[in-house]
Image (cartoon, rainbow, N blue to C red; front, side, top):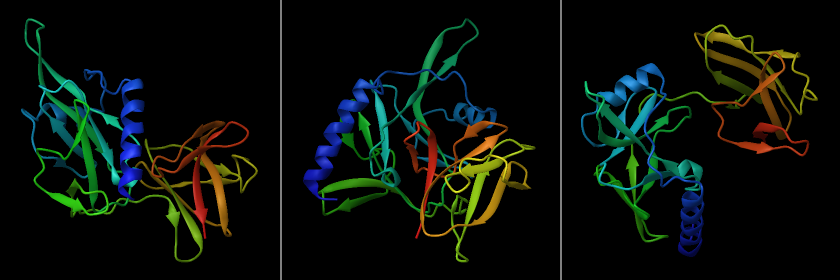
Length: 242
């Protein structure tokens, strides 16, 4: 990525982020129970906290707004931080810290990222691990050695695609796409462990759009970040077999 392209993208993202309201403070209302418990155990801003399922980034409440962008999204999406509020016996609310939780759905061993704090792009001041990029003359924060390799939908060595879905236990989950003319009854994913579903399917070279289905209700592949709108208006996951 050359320097001019990077800064042009930065300017566009900042405008989009402000227009979309990422700069607004948000109070935590709903979170999965285990994640909510983990967030409330953080007493003050700190270096990124890594668990098997999440990476939690924090910042001080003295900032008006904080966002974060990642290398695996080509720094094209600003994720807004939320504010953790502590409530006392009288119902008074006190801000504790700002945070963003990245759910670890993909096979990533190293993450590079930048933060946008009160409109200024910077490295994470709470993460001492940084990397200098000569192409854009900037430092990037990074997290290495993430340990466990997280499964995601991908092409296998035997010229099949291993479709993956992570969700609730006991789902009757089907697969459909351009390779089935969107018929949702041909292929069924197997629940190989609680809440983990998979299906091996041989596919020839090409670009495919697909969704999972519960009955006739489409569900995007939550392990695949590649998504698009098809010509007939569907929101679909995308995979390329080459």
